[in-house]
Image (cartoon, rainbow, N blue to C red; front, side):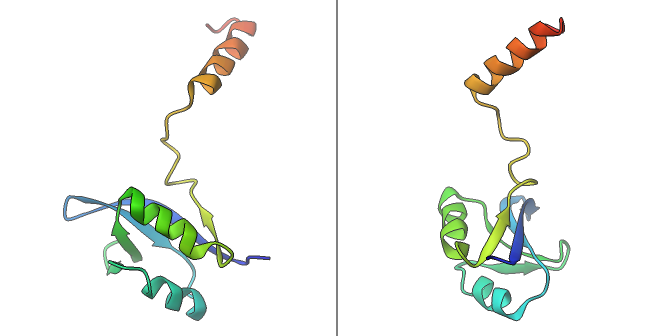
Length: 99
């Protein structure tokens, strides 16, 4: 069972989009984070970050698989819904007279 957790956050550092890694202090997790390429610490946000690219996001998921649970609730909260989900939402709203 994975007991470590990392929360992913959107950060902007010097006008560049970045992926923030927020987690409780843990030596094993800290050592693993330090192995990521281009990783840096932000004093302003008090968390580690790396450039927000598709490659870095995929790397994070591969890197921490089986090591830590990745919480994307803040990172993906503004993700667009799919057309299938949108159609289901419209159908449910029409049933209650809101569309």
